[in-house]
Image: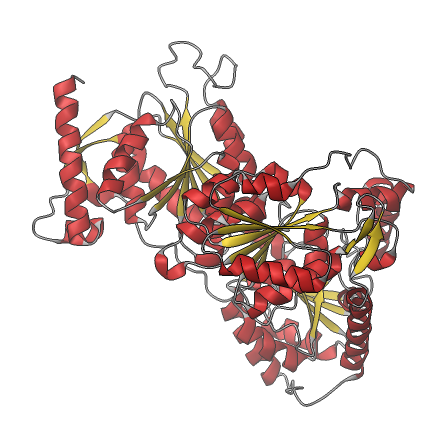
Length: 633
């Protein structure tokens, strides 16, 4: 294409962007009498128009030579007020921010990268979206289609489509080898990122030489929008399930991420089947922590009461759970369960266990029908009753509360590394989690010991207070998630607290720049024990000693954070009172803060929340696997 022809397309692009803004959206423009549907557009503009029609307004970008044309299109549409483009310093950070934005506010976002290392970093971080069921677009530069020779930063093999195969292992993907296929690519992406029960990342690979290709007289009505249909309730199995529930004496209900929105139906179900609930960290607050039937988390790093309910139950009801290793103690979590009722819209997840009545369908609709089936079978509401099973479980929860209180009553221990008494992680997390709940903050937990202690400690009274990436346990997720606090739509802005360890923080410290640049409002709570404490503890538990999971490098994190103009850096002190005072100062600051807290690591049991489940890891594997096959579930 000559320069003059391309300039005409650019001018038309500017006019189109302004017309869309004036009409209130592309669909509205096309519906108007002045909105012609045919346009000469480059492939890059067709992509941006397609995402705009699907409600994608937020782009987190690390631009490179593999995405210059897309960047130019976004510049024009940003000038028209149609999109917000946030240039960040790490594709990993971008992927985490996009996942957090979708998780907390349900706003859709796209991550835009160049070819090669940047795209591969985004691919790695997309594990969060894939594991936690979050719909995120990834627009990645790719090698040219004419195969004129190796492209810089492509995978160095003499074949095409290598990125397509690699990215396809993580999620759904499409290579825009042919510009005319863009509508199909966008439809497949829509079906993935807006999937009604198993959303995930979608990778749109953009060859460098097709991005500028002009699609003559492209019909804008081809650009897909809307949402995929939600499946209905399970068709059959209700009578069988109801009979098993009525006959059972000790029902445990495991709630996973797929039952996140089913709180009302879940409460009704628990009373009808006289069950107790064990929650995944993904659904903290699905019913209030204080509810008498809530036994909190269970699994490899569960609670005393959660693991007791799992161990002693004679019937398991699994709701929207993938049953990952730590959620069910590597498939040994229900040794006395004689039968399983599994409600899930995904067939593989619904049939995970043996001896299962699988109800495959929408969670809320299926639970409502199962509740009706229980009533028809003679089940009574147990809201005013306390059965022997509930009595046992409540006694175990009281034991758990006493166990926690003992740790909170000793908030400080002497630490050899710091040479003085410092806060324990349980005490620091408890103080900050309670403070966050009282102040309406959204709490994010990073991977490692902070995360493992955190989901045993938080006491959410509703959904939306705590977000913890237990699917991927990606170090650096929490601090990167704070970026979403500043990039969400004004009506969805929030104050965030990122609970992170020194290891996780140093994986993704870019938030100190990007958080200021893009208006993040929140606090990084940096709990420093100078090690990867979760792995140190695992090594000690398995082999009696830790190895190569700590360092001797002293870092002044307050001074480090203070070097970034706009970051409010504070020392959180060595007591609960000092930590609360620091958090209050952070909240009063209009922007991003960092509160540094040295925390204890050592052999004293009061410095940790403990482990009460099993896990198929290291030298425990043979024993755990043998138990799994003995149980035979």
